Length: 277
Image 1 (cartoon, rainbow, N blue to C red):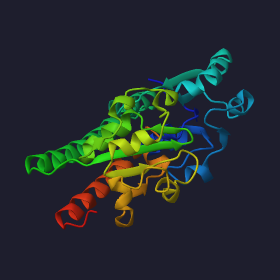
Image 2 (image 1 turned 45 degrees about the vertical axis):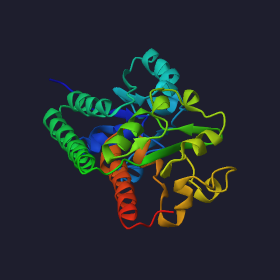
Image 3 (image 1 turned 30 degrees about the vertical axis):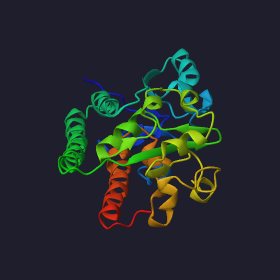
Image 4 (image 1 turned 30 degrees about the horizontal axis):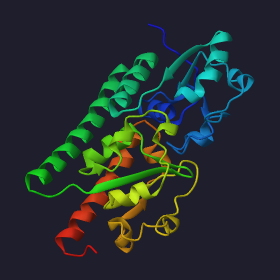
């Protein structure tokens, strides 16, 4: 069977996955927002942004397949298809979708065995985290309430896979009812005092494209009595880089999940030691 030989990746998670599958030589170009693996930024030409891209720059690397993610990349894909190039458009919003993406990319590149191995490894990571959380539940340990902030102005709460990761790590998503919405504008909070009213035990910030600033969060009006703010000095407000938790590829489980687990383990340790404010 003939497989694709020159793949243009407009999303960082496709680049990461193809490298993990041993298919890096098939990548003809990458998104300028690619983070993992770091060597991809030196090895491969950058041909697009995330929500922006010029057709001529994409076509210049002579792709036989263009891979993209999300509705934000739909317009450029229409132009790519009109130019006669095949497209693979992912739009998953959950962890099951990450595993599907891995298997699809494996099939498109002739790396089916590697894809099955990677998917099994990611599934094992999820299973281990779920088992640890279940053991804590069985021991009567409470699950901390975790508030995840994807953007600060306006305030946007976490997408579906973030809520799944919080649950896997042994926490509760403070805005689980909003995580079901796929579009960011549907997860906007009209009033930041909604967060204070829910009194999260832990706060995680991941402001896509810029550094999270916890010092501005703890100064918000009415947040001083929030447990996470009161325990700020104990590390109960943290940043997880957007590349680790907002790009829906393997890094969600290899980098994002461990950071959430470490945060929740620390919370349990502080609670056991009677150190919570």
